[in-house]
Length: 89
Image 1 (cartoon, rainbow, N blue to C red):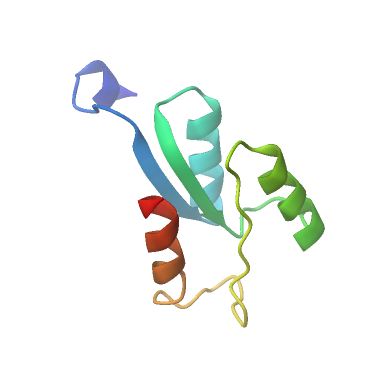
Image 2: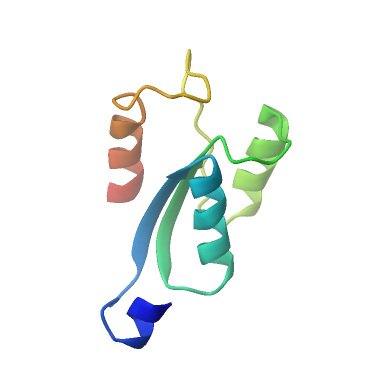
């Protein structure tokens, strides 16, 4: 918010976060900050795949993607192509 007050942030941001960083991304989006797109992975909420799909379906232009074979410690190169496609849309 400090950056916004100083006029440094212009336009809408695209945000990505893993785990608690994903929670921060969701909080920023929910707070009304100008967020163009938000992507999260393994947020610290008790959710199974069905619940995560339901959240994605409830959000305008929401998308659910599974990263096969990945755990909470996702390999850095795995989400890159998915995120590139998502943020380019």
